[in-house]
Amino acid sequence: MTRGPDPTLARTIDRYVGSVEGAGYSPHTLKSYATRLNDFLRWVVADGGGDPDDPADLARPAALQSPDTIQAYLAALRRRRIGRRVGVSPQTLAHAYAVLSGFHRWMERTLRLEPNPMRDVLRPRGETSVDDEFKSLTADQLEDLLEAARNGWPSGHGPADLRTTNRKLEDWLLVAFMGLAGLRVSELCNIDRDDIVGDMVHVLGKGRKRRAVPLAPEILEALGEYSPPRQGRHLFGRPTDPARRLAPYAVEQRVPRLARRAGILELRVTPHVLRHTFGSLMLAADPAALIPTRDLMGHESVETTNKYAHTREEARRLALLSMHELRGRRSQS
Image: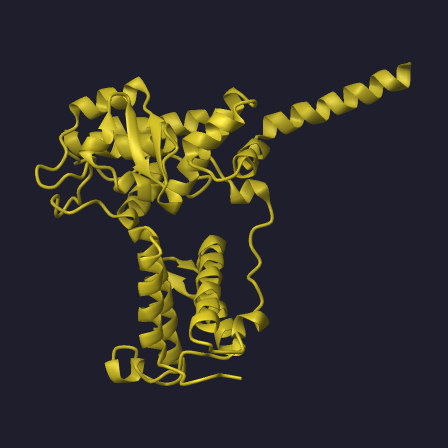
């Protein structure tokens, strides 16, 4: 039973985002929470016959929605058309569920609004395959992508390459920081020029934890040739407004386009895929390097890092072959 007044959903979302900001979450996390919750609010208004663009309609819905309403919103995300694709990714759906769960736990704990409807909302089924969850490029595909970013793509793989030399360097650095250094896209966009000290880049990761990541000589060489924006401290600026920091969504659009022009069509190459590629290639080179790879990628647990070792088909083939050889030796003895 709800105790006390039930405030409007819009006002409650603002209060919740403010409380999360006070807890020290990163700007990227705050923005993703606010975007998801306001998308939910607009959907609730539209589903109830209101106008999502009318402030008066946005202010009417009560904070607590029924489990059926929340379940219907998640189902609508599965059907939402995004460009040519229908439905958000499993990761986006899981993120929406997690944000709504955190929001409702906060309402239950802080505002004493109950019962918590999320208790009756089914968790979206995610990808169950480790290979699907941790898709990555081969070493050759990563090299092809770096080559296309720096030197252009073969004729027939896209329109004529009209990028400036500096834009090519920037594209190469974006791919390299994620694929060769293992940075998250948010960490990449938040790099300032003075974050690069010697052969290290100092980044602010999840939980506002800083870590220093060594940079390969080829990245340092490219940085020496690259001209960052003249205004501001940031390393990467927006193409249309260099004085403003490059946004993660811009990188998320740029990377798949570069990958298609590099001839990589087997999977959609995202910043996450590049980071996964770094983890997989690190452990392919040295399966015992779990701890260093964990530290480089900024993982909380080595168990997360270990998942990258499970995506190598060749390693699994060798393990299966070893098992059969062992059985053969036992049967002969």
